[in-house]
Image 1 (tube, rainbow, N blue to C red):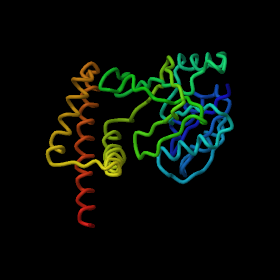
Image 2 (cartoon, one colour):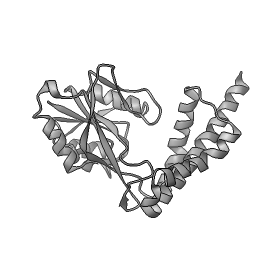
Image 3 (cartoon, helix red, strand yellow):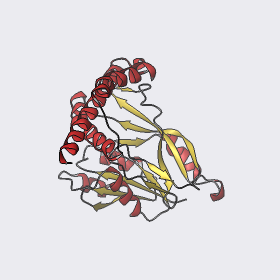
Image 4 (tube, rainbow, N blue to C red):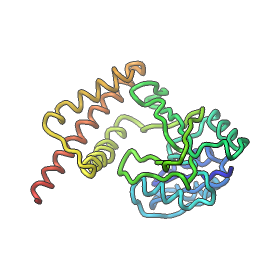
Length: 257
C-alpha cells in the first residue's frame, strides 16, 4: 500500500514546512502551488515534496489535479494548515499491514480544529468527518466552488479511521472575518446560484439567527466558551452574507433576461 500525500498551496510559508513534515511517512509528497510569491515552494522542496506550478483553478480542481499527478493509487489529501495526529498516523500505518482484499476504497477521518487557543468540540466543528484517504481509481474531487469533497464511485466502500486531522483554523478574528467576506460567502453564494437555489427577503432575515442557534445551542457551541460564541457569531454572519450576495446575483441575472 503506497500512499501519495497531496497538498495545495499559495503563500503558505508559515505552514508548509509542518504540513510536509506531518506527511513525511508517505511514499511521495506532491505540492501543487498556484504562484506563491513567498518561500512556499523552496520550503516544500527542502522537505521532500515535488512541487508543481499551476494557475489557480479553484479548490476542487486543484486537488483533483494534484491527485492526477501522483505515482501511487492511494491518495492522502492534506491542507497546508492541517497536521496528522500521531493516532491517525498509526491508523494509516496499520492499513499497510492489512491484506489488500480487506481494505476499503476510501477512509473518512475526523478533523479537529484549534481556534482561539483551544480545541473545538461543538458548533458542528467536530468530528467534521472528511474523506481524505482514498483510491484514485475509485474516487474524485467533486467540481464544487466551496466545501469540496471526494466522491466515491458506486462500487467504492468507505470506512472510518481512528485519529484526527488537526486543523489550525484562522490566525485571529480579523482573519476569520476577512475570509468570510472575501472567500467563503461569495463562493457559497455562487455555488447556490449554480445549483439553482434562490433566496428571498424572509430567508435573508432568518439565515443569520438560524445559523447562530444551530451552531451555539443545537450543536453545542456553548461548550467551547468564548470560542464557541465567536464561531456561532461568524456562522450567522456567513449565513446572512451568502444569502444577501445570492440575492444580488439573482437580481443581476433577472436584469439581464
